[in-house]
Amino acid sequence: MAKTITKVKDSFARNPLPWVVLAGGAIYLASRGVKAVSNLASKGLLNKFETSASSNPFAFRSFMGSIPKGTTVIYFTTATATQIAQDIYSAFGYFTDDETAVLNAFRKFKTQAQVAQVAQIFSTRYKTDLLQYLKQGYGPLPQAGLSDEEYQTVLKLVNALPKYK
Image (cartoon, rainbow, N blue to C red; front, side):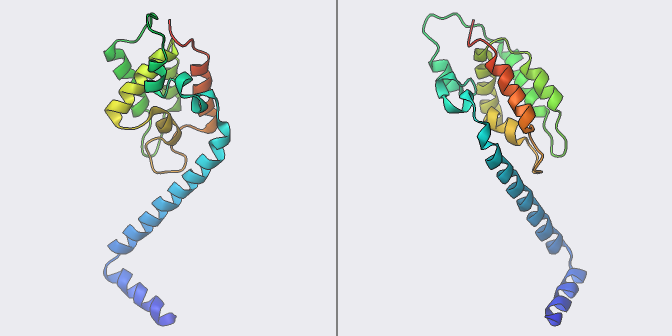
């Protein structure tokens, strides 16, 4: 056993890079594991958005497909919707998140159809689901993404909106 420890110490002294990479990988995987456990714990936060696709503006295909034909729907301009999607995406970083910017972006919506529009642009532009991005954020750390309370606040804001006008 002592011989093995000595070999490891010698190996580290000669070339520490593989050991640093290995340690970094272990830390990353451990943080992802903590995030996964956290997500499992938050599964109890289900609401109507996650249980019914046609009434879920984050599931934009189903939601937009459920709007009755002939209904007048007010959408953002493409530039405005793209800017809101970018504001949400940019609010999350590797080490820090700007939750206030996310909440402010969601306060700009007047209808759930506008949420669906931004969710569609977000998905196309960033190749990820908006609702999932809100939960997990961009960074590898377990605290990335919105907290359960902030996430629920976003869902309450969206739920309070009319479907369309």
